[in-house]
Image 1: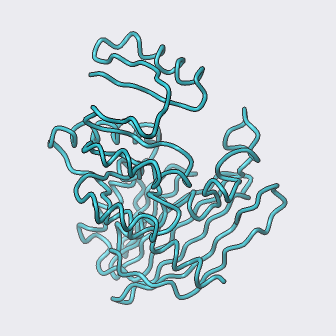
Image 2 (image 1 turned 120 degrees about the vertical axis):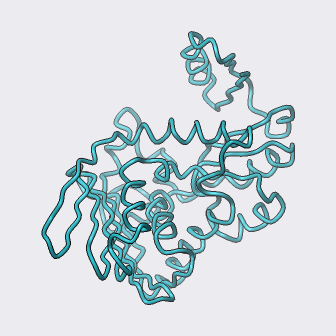
Length: 297
């Protein structure tokens, strides 16, 4: 397979290309990036700052290639709706947690009826932003800058996608706070709290921040028969029902989900798989982002 890699940092692109030199299956070369010259590819990956996703996906899709865009597809649903409408069946959005084994296990339990009818979902994420990339200045990262599409709501949009996976897109925001509450040198929100309600009555709560000094992340689903809880920090999947508590290990490293996502993308190019998150599904989480922001104003 021929792979060409472009990056604003030429040395970084060249180093990645060199690292793949030992793989006989790949011919990887670094090239100068030109958004107007993308013809000749079966698949294109857009992995730029959030604010550039929709703008760069447009010419990539116009070539006829299938395109994997890093999550989220855009900064607002309005910026993505045209892409989704113009290029049906040609978009995959990089929500790699759809390929994370512990998440897949929780979803299989819930969708298989283990908890009964869902009544409540709780999703949480917290991590101290300066610790994310210790070798770089966090203030220069896309996460910290509004002009690049930063802020914890878009950064942690995975959690909203998981709500869509669990409950479907029929969710309405009924309460929200989007705020900058900490002492970080950022011009974006560092804290989000929201309550959403499904049309069938289930309630979902969302809790996101850039401030927690100890990494925390989890997903809990309560139903009429049981509660299933995935706690990433403790690396456990717990099932609670009338018989007591059952615990399973959930220690698969998240890095493996990126490899699985890459495998799905390559299989999709050959029509051997379908995208875990396509354009319309990616729009659903963006509409939740928009709804949270509107209600928080």
